[in-house]
Amino acid sequence: MRAAVLGAGSWGSAFAKILGDAGNDVVLWARRPEIAAAIRDTGRNPEYLGNTPLGERVTATASATEAIKGAELVVLAVPSQTLRVNLGDWAADLTDDSTLVSLMKGIELGTTQRMSQVIVEAARVAPDRVAVVSGPNLAGEIALEQPAATVVACSDIDRATRVQHAITTPYFRPYTNDDVVGCELGGAVKNVIALAFGIAHAMGLGDNTKAMLITRGLAETARLGVALGADPLTFSGLAGLGDLVGTCMSPLSRNRTFGEHLGRGKSLEQAQAATRYTAEGVKSCLAIRDLARSHGVEMPITEQVERVCHEGVDPKVAVAALMSRSTKAE
Ligand SMILES: NC(=O)C1=CN([C@@H]2O[C@H](COP(=O)(O)OP(=O)(O)OC[C@H]3O[C@@H](n4cnc5c(N)ncnc54)[C@H](O)[C@@H]3O)[C@@H](O)[C@H]2O)C=CC1
Ligand SMILES: O=C(CO)COP(=O)(O)O
Image 1 (tube, rainbow, N blue to C red):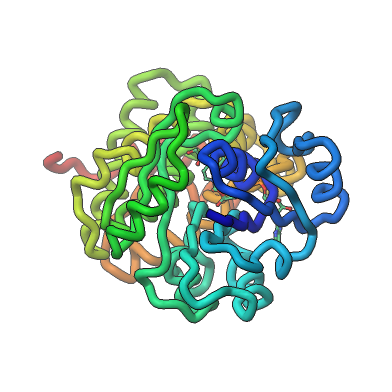
Image 2 (cartoon, rainbow, N blue to C red):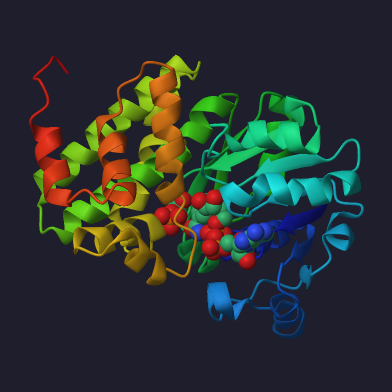
């Protein structure tokens, strides 16, 4: 297959390698011409993936039109909050029958839309042409070909199976699922819980606290998911518990690392200044909180993460607020 990967950051570049290793011809679009040139010249993306070779089937361009031309798979790997504007530039170049694959784990500010909803609206495509790839997939580990699994979610299960075949390699094992809502929410909310985990870690809190955050974080993710029509079982799978645990446990996680800055007392601006890569939970916590409130769903950890990030609340005050909630049945 011919594949375009739009976005040459950490995950876009690692995903391009997966596609190439699975036998596809891949054109990676980089916003910055110097990154596209470096990938073409060296076969690597040192700014995002160190010395990892991307493989002979991967080339790069700074022209999205050139990348998309003739692509049967168009993979979107840009920050969640820029996707709509990006698609405005790219929609006219898409062919009628291409599959759009979303790698993003975020919720759009303002609209509270999931990324597949943004794609349907901004690219003007039918929902069954959009597949979502989500799971415990830290780009740095996958670039090193460490074994990992993921989920390809699409309302058209034949299309999900085609994408599954296109990204299967000896080190990358995709499963299919038709629960797009559950998979996308699992990916977006775990970033917020990873912020909470990072805050707790930096505050010196121990494993009981961390296990509580993961478990109750998953509970509030599933509550929102069920309210939006997701299958509750999805949250015990790779795109739910799997990604939540992988992200919280990993020092590679940008969200967890961002949380650690906040937990050490840095302000939002100081934490942003210390962060080079996209930490989606920082913006998405606002959108997820709004989405939950509009559906009458309680998400106490998300509420407190939003207060620490955007309202300058001291993490100790946020912990006390969580622990003093009224007692209830599990
Ligand atoms: N890095 C990882 O391990 C994983 C990331 N993801 C998700 O993939 C998505 C992309 O993240 P990463 O590649 O990790 O981020 P990154 O921070 O490594 O790279 C972001 C990319 O977006 C580009 N970009 C920034 N502003 C832009 C704009 N206005 N228009 C177009 N492009 C812009 C940057 O130049 C860069 O190429 C996020 O939603 C993230 O949650 C999902 C799974 C794993
Ligand atoms: O989504 C990820 C792993 O599945 C990457 O998490 P971070 O964005 O926190 O690095």
